[in-house]
Image (cartoon, rainbow, N blue to C red; front, side, top):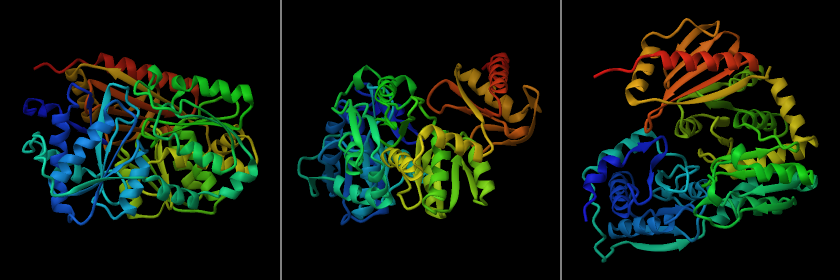
Length: 479
């Protein structure tokens, strides 16, 4: 069977290729994409370096991984497959530790159960940069989807990526300090790959732990493996009922974090980034640049300015943060969608480490998490209020909106003057009083995302209402 007719469906987004299982994410297409990746590997690495493969808890993810391994072995590569589902940061760390030719990770991250995905992680242990993914995408058209020959010149073996990662994590944390705090913690695995990792680290660090949803369920309990409010209702209730110090969660492949304070508030990723930037400086004596995406809070800018730290703004996608981490000394890098990494860690987002650093911050300060959040926001001259609109538009309407704001950006929004227009990723309107609005078109859906930040809840509502109205007044482009 040939899947050539489906090749047009293989589109790489900000972090690899994702598709719906049995629609476009099929075994023939996995073989095709694996061979496209292998064509890149042939030029970038020698075959004395192994290729690692791992997968998350999704339906057939382990079978897709095995299929990919068979294709690579057929092409003469030594392949090591994780012995169970594992977090993305774990296989990424091992990609560097084992001097590999990189790793293939089968995951659709926080997407719903019908999706699966594949991403290539180079040997530097961070997301593949655009020049690498562009090369892989260019290879797809000529890649075969045929079955392997059955006479592999390479080999396949299983391995456990956990021990080396755990050693590494314990070196980044002050385990004794966390143990001394005797924290009561609730953990919702959301049926993700962090089970057996985050819970084990918490117990090793002396926390009194209660865990939920720590088994594999390919339907994620009927929800989504995304550590946001609507998915964390049970965790919030458990924290409040038992007066726990905090609640923790991760997304499906454990590269994004979820944090609940002792009052049951689900902290935004923006808040956690600020909290941890302060913790790393104040309590751990670390320093370096702060890196954030265009869509992430400017409270980080205020914090950087106050302490004389460099601040870098990147396009959306952790690959851009990871690239900056490989270029310069970065204290913390992160994005509003829930990913972060820190000084001394790999240039890949890690929900397990992020969650543990929040526990560590509480242990150092001896104060409730909600109080630490207030102190961090005050120190960064906050609060700032954030909102995101996901506007479902036709492709022609989406095009018209982006063209309008690119060519004729407004001079003011909701009565606040536009000081500067940025076009790093979408169109970003830098307003007076530290406010801003960002418009970004989705690369894969008929959707425009509008991010906003300002200094009052009332202004935020006004910004949101005006942007919604103005965008819907723009006439779609006609052919």
